[in-house]
Image 1 (cartoon, one colour):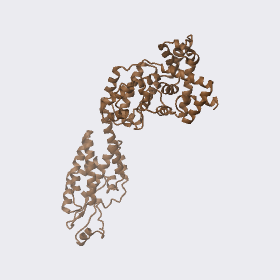
Image 2 (cartoon, helix red, strand yellow):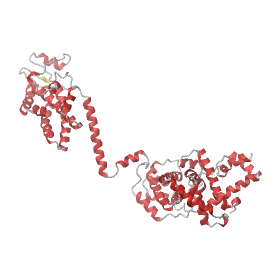
Image 3 (spheres, one colour):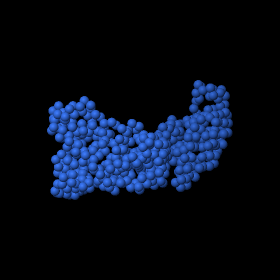
Length: 300
Length: 210
C-alpha cells in the first residue's frame, strides 16, 4: 500500500469504520512506514486532547422537575411538533372556545354544502309555472290534468276496473321546466345562502300546497294517487324543521312563524296513504284554503 | 475491526451516564414509558441527560440555553416515544431530537451576529495570544481553547465533529442522527478535524505531546 492510500483511509481506520481486510492492510503499512505511523500518533494525540475537553456542565435538579411537570400527563399518541398536522392542531388548540366555534362553523359549512348538493340533485318540482308569476295565477286556471294510469301496475288495474274511479296525478304539470326557480330566488334579491335555501324551500312548499288546494275532487273518485306529493312533503318537512330551527336561532321570527305554520300541513300530507281517499285529501285542501297559507307563502 | 455495537456504549461511557438503574435496558425503559410508567422516563432522563446537554452545549455554546433545550428535547422525546422504531437505538434517537431542537434554536439567531461574535471574541482573541504548549495549559484554558475552536466551525461540521469525537458515534449513527449522506459526513468530518487542528496546533506543539 502506498502512503497516499494509507493517509486517505487513516481517519476511517482510526475511527474503526474500515472493514477487516482494509484495516489489516493499513495496520501492515503503519508497521512498516514511520511517516504514516507519525501521522497516526498525531491523530491519536489529538483524540486524547479532545477527550480532556470538559464542558463543566452539571444537570441542575430543577431540570428534571421542569421536564416532569411538562410530561405529567401520560405519553399521548405521537404528534409531531414541527409537522403540518401539529400546526393545524395548534390553530384550534387555544383558547378552548375557539375550537368549539371552529368546529361549529365547520359543521355548518359542511351541512350547507351537503344541502346545496342535495338540492341540485333533486328532480324537477311541480307547478313552477304557477310560482314564477304567483300573483297572476289563478287556481281555476291551472287545474291538475288527469294522467292516464299505466296498465302495467296491478294496483292501478284495480282502480281502473271501476269506471267511477279517476286517478289523478297532482303533479301533472311537473314536466314544466323548473329552472325558473333560480329566477324566483334572485327576484327576492336574496344574497345570503341560507336565505336562498329558505326561499327555495318556501317556493317548493307553495307549489305543493297549491297543487293540493287546486285538486278537483269528484265524489265518484275512489282513490287519488298522492304518492309523489307525499314523498315531496316528507322531504320538505325535514327541510322545514331544519330551517325553522335555524330561523329561530338567528331571531328571524317572521320566517320562523311561517315555517311553523307549514309544518302541520306537511305532516298531514306526508302521512297520507299513497292512494288517498277523496275525504282525506279534501280535509287537507280545506285547511290550506282556510289558513290562506299559500297567500302567506307568496307574500314571503 | 468494526467497533462492537454495544447498546448505548457510547453514551454510557460518558460521566454520570450510569445515574440510572443498570438493570433496565433502554428498550425496557422505552416499553415501560409507553405503558405510562413515569419513573421509567425518569431513569432515561438520568441516563442520557448529561450526554444530551453536552451535545447541545457543543452546538449552541450557551450553558443556560443548553439546559433549556435539553428540557425541550426530553419533553419532545416523551411525547414522541410511541413513534420510536424498535430497531432504533435510544441514544441515536435522542441525539436526533436534540439535534433538531438545537438547530431550531440556532436558526433563530442571526448568522451575522454569530460571525461577529466568533471573529471578534473567540478565535481572534485566542490567536492573538502567545502560544503556550498544551501541556502547560490549565484544563480551564484548554477547555476554552477547544470551545472557541468548535464555535468557529460551521454548523454541519460542528455537528459531525461533536458526534464523532465527543460522543464516539459511528458513521452510521451520525448519518441517522443528522440525515447526512455518508459521503457528506466523511467530508465534513475530515474538514472539521483539519480546522480544529489548525486552530489548536499553535498551542499543542509538535506531535501534541501532552
